[in-house]
Length: 128
Ligand code: THU
Image 1 (tube, protein in one colour):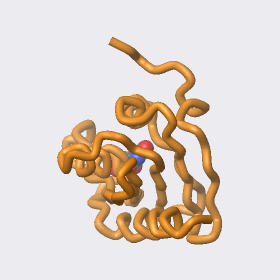
Image 2 (image 1 turned 90 degrees about the horizontal axis):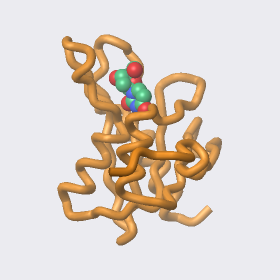
Image 3 (image 1 turned 180 degrees about the vertical axis):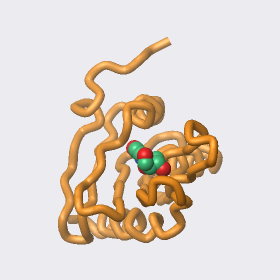
């Protein structure tokens, strides 16, 4: 696997350290590789008013977007549990906005991961 993707996977694993998840104790780290080769990482942020929680994928995405990076190539997602976690439906729709061909890497460890096409995870998205 190319070096940049190894770096991306490591970033997702590292990012979950900053997860703020006192309610679920489910830590998620996400790292996005943009079209211009930049990496933006984020973690899930929970709130006592549960529904205000923001997923790691969208935290990473808004960091990239607000830095002027609007096209994503890969997103790597790591958790503190044994099982890998697919992005939730809201995140899939959000990510679709910034890439039609995004590849989603579900990370178990630095050496164990699976790659999916966003299109396969969300075959039909809402279009305005
Ligand atoms: N979570 C994510 O960060 N990404 C997802 O795609 C699904 C869920 C977080 C939100 C919450 O902090 C915790 O996982 C449990 O739902």
